[in-house]
Amino acid sequence: MKKKDILVAPSILSADFANLERDIKKIEHAGADWVHVDVMDGKFVPNLTIGAPVVKSLRKVSKLVYDVHLMIHNPEDFIDAFIKAGSDIITLHYESDCKNLNDTLEYIKKAGIKAGLSIKPKTPVSVIAEYLDLIDLILIMTVEPGFGGQKFMTSCVPKITESFELIKQHNKNIDIEVDGGINTETAKIVVNAGANVLVAGSYVYNATNIKEAIDSLKF
Image (cartoon, rainbow, N blue to C red; front, side, top):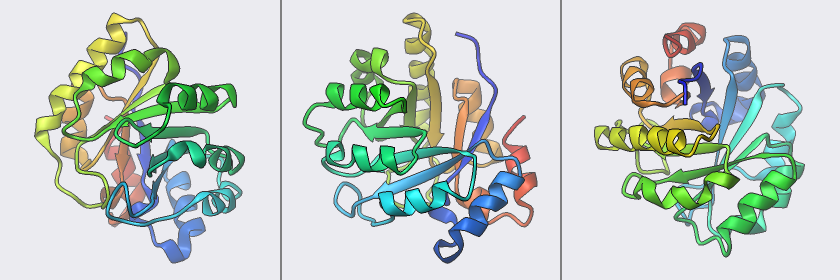
């Protein structure tokens, strides 16, 4: 498996929720590749964000890839809504209480949507192995999911390399996305470890120059 070009997916968790259309257009014009949409239900993680109706409305304002990260319980109950909302990628958590993860991932794929699987910092990469035929993306969390602006956990870096080797071993074409504490310094660490998609929220949206911030992640 060759290393891929770096893609930047700013998270709108750090955007101004009163001006989401404006802030998505900002990152699009600044050279972002994807827009990362964190969906939280206040149960799976201790925070509450947005649902499918908001994604549907935001879909109309940009041609960016909509990378929807479901941090929710019973995700299978909401897949149809997020497909209809215009998601390009739907990522589930291994740790969610999905009744049948295989069937749900396959359902996403059959709908023509890319499927992702995410793991929390304490979950081993080995749990992903049985799902490699059903996913297009592995999302490695380098913070505990729930809130933006957290400090990068260096202890998670070996999991990125392990994911890269797992994909290579099985000759799969799967993106490795990293979310949590990404900035110009930590971006180098995770890319060197094998990641090719970088989720950056506060680093991008709090920057004086958003284009320069995004460019600094593509080295």
